Length: 146
Image 1 (cartoon, rainbow, N blue to C red):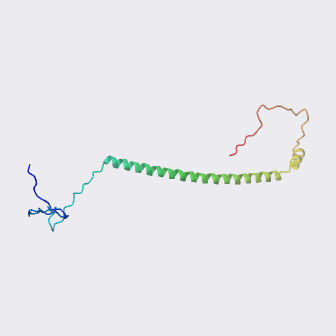
Image 2: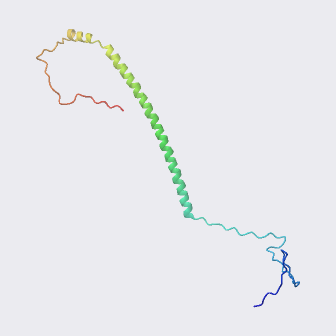
Image 3: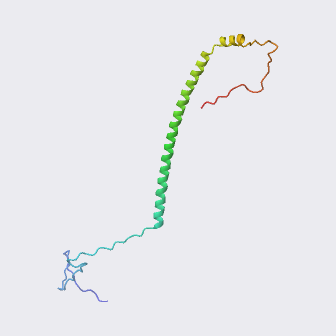
């Protein structure tokens, strides 16, 4: 193999050849006046399965959000309906108690007794006509309040 016998002079950032040999010119990557060519743009291929998965994921999230909003709306509507019905029940109970009080006040038991005994011929029961018995069924009335 041949040895390189060229001697370089130190002390300069640009190296000079001692033997007056011509310095080889650098290659130009492009000609002057022409623009350098750009790298070709590589287009990535989109995986259709990944697109389908993303679309279904977005659709599932959107339907979940829609169902949640719909449930909350229905819950609010039902709560308002329950509140309206409870206020209506309270009003009806007040009206019922007022009507019962008016009915109680309008009935004169003395007049009813007088009419029954004198006009209709009712008589008080004698001790022979009164029979007592014990009921096996409960006489309690169950009231369900909510």
